[in-house]
Image (cartoon, rainbow, N blue to C red; front, side, top):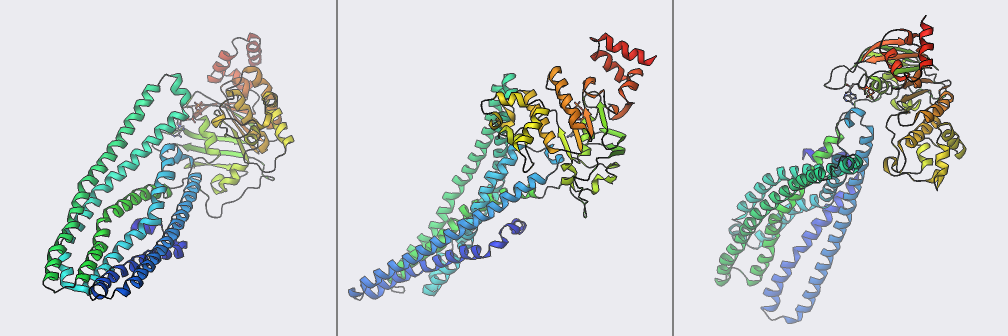
Length: 588
Ligand SMILES: Nc1ncnc2c1ncn2[C@@H]1O[C@H](COP(=O)(O)OP(=O)(O)OP(=O)(O)O)[C@@H](O)[C@H]1O
């Protein structure tokens, strides 16, 4: 019931459908009760005394009752179906919104396949129960109460004796529920492991194939599939064990009725019509109790699925707007960036950055250099508020970014990452991603600056070419150039180039950099690069190692100092002695 309370927001506005689904089912149940009475009447008052002229009207009455019952069943199905669908749709949309709201920290550990199974299989179980299972479960109660009352009115002693085996049936039904619930929970988990394996294999298909790991992946899948199978078998074993037992318990009632009811009829203490009516009515009680296992089964699936969906809905959002968050105006923002003694560590890790201070007035270019894992990307992540800083502060235009509206902050920043993500859409849509009302001319201009226009025009469909998922069908460099065009279009105040030209050759890099110069004009730019050629023109180059700033200055200053910058420079320019001599000359 706690689960139902927590899910209230999704069904609270559907009171009419809930009432309709329950009411029509109860009506169908109630109308169904008339039938045994008609049978009893037919035997005792028509056939027995020989009033055969009433047979036809009674038969018509039965047709009427059956039709009315069918109509109510239809209305129940109609309301239940709508209810289930509306609730499931609302949950699906809320879940999707939540997935979008969750911050980077959540996705550091999330498994795509698991999330997919929550949005599909789990929601389906919830839809089934909310639409039908719940009303059916309530109907069990109504059937038992109404059927029981009808029987008691006919003969209360026979009713009590007949229903003696009921506690046994109930005991079995609840025991079954207790045992099957953990199995269903495991089954859901196993299902999500399966989808995760499939998703990872498809996403990483190139890596799998290049390392010839198909067999390993197949085995991994088979293991998980086996786990799912064994959960299914375990559940079936429980069904196989409990259902015959429940059926036997239910049939005990029938046996008791045969013996005791039959004796009463022989002794003329019970009319034959009532005896026959009792047979129909007994199923009103046994039927639902016996089917209780099935309804409970539905309920437990619903409970297990709801737990998983609620866990996702209750996930904390690490980075969110503070109350009264300030919205930065993209037209008037300047792009002054200041890191003030920032120290940061990822959850459960040693600091990725220690005491970082960077001053980047609007329009300046900051170069970040350092070995892998030095903390360069972390600086960028913090600036975009992928994570919140706990020690020190970062300001943009003098405002602590924690006080800024997250969307508005990100709207003035354009990042180009090492790994480019392209959507399975046209190249045009990929370049114009997230920006409304972009003209073809603007798109082409951006593509030209990013040196992407020529190769796009060589494709048979040009800008209308649909790229495969994650940009399949394009080379790494081509994908990167599209990402660069995307950044151009956004016209940001702050530009981030995180190893943005790592996938292109030196010559193209040189060409793109000419475009970058245009893009960088008037914007604050952070460039992360392993090649000195990419950042030598920066206003300040910051050299990081293990999260600490070990050197800072302009290219000219740094090549004159002994240290990691000059070492990198010497390695990268070993083939250009003229350059080295020039740098050495500068030193003198
Ligand atoms: N999402 C994350 N969760 C936990 N730790 C992380 C995460 N991202 C980075 N780290 C850790 O933080 C440290 C700095 O990583 P960062 O990505 O900033 O380095 P980098 O200098 O950009 O490296 P590279 O040149 O390889 O991109 C590393 O020790 C890394 O393992």
